Amino acid sequence: MYVSETFKIPRIGKIPLYVIIVIFVFLLAVLQDYIYSSIKHTGFYLSESLLYNTFWIFFIPLTILINRLIKMVNPKNKLGKLPFNVGIGITFSFLHIVLFTSLFVMVSNLVYTTPHRFLAILKTVLSNQFYIALLWYIIFPAMYYLKQKSADVATQYLGTMKLKKGSKIITVPTSRIQLISTDKPYSVIYANDQKFLDTQPLKEFQTKLDPTLFLRVHRSTIINATYIKELKSRNNGDYDVTLDNGQVIRVSRHYRKNWQQLLQ
Image (cartoon, rainbow, N blue to C red; front, side, top):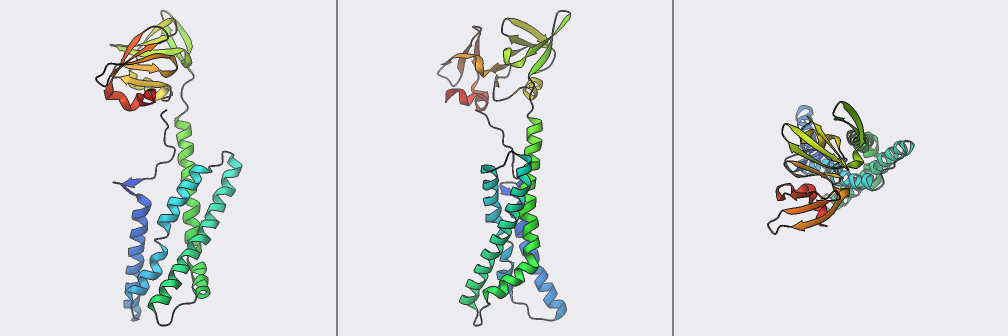
């Protein structure tokens, strides 16, 4: 069955946007250290700057982990979303800082003759970077819920349609529609034992009807999957579908992505 993705992370090409942002900020932070040391005439040590600014790199794996977590938990209750969001923000901020401090001290012990102490680095990072991590890890779940809300609004498909028959306008439950086909300049709607003509194109019906039920199986046909009685292969990639009303519809391989679930 077709499942719409409620939250799609923005990408540039195949790379998630947040990865590009993190790498850009990381490089910018190193450049800032260099400029600051040049202005203040203090020593600039590239290895130390790179090590300290690995703080930014931790945003990448932890954001991936948050993305998976909120998709699994995703509280349905609106009252549950806020504490869950804040809880994620605080938990992942502390996790981020502890992981970064641990890495910093470990590398420091391996590289420097006078290594940095864990508590000293932890206090520095908590005072300077905790708010940055907290903002990031609260904003990211909030983006998810906003996208999800938009998707939920967008997927409120029609439960009934007003269709004209002669001089009458009849309200027809969409659950009764078995088939919509093109007979230019009209679309023909078959609702059980009734037949209606409408001026809307098939593309318009696709936006109004639930795509998990109403499948575009041909350039001129939409069928209601709940009324499929039989599916028979033509041995060339196409299939014939027999509906409950006895109509036989060709299912084109060119629209296979829309009806692939019928073969499962």
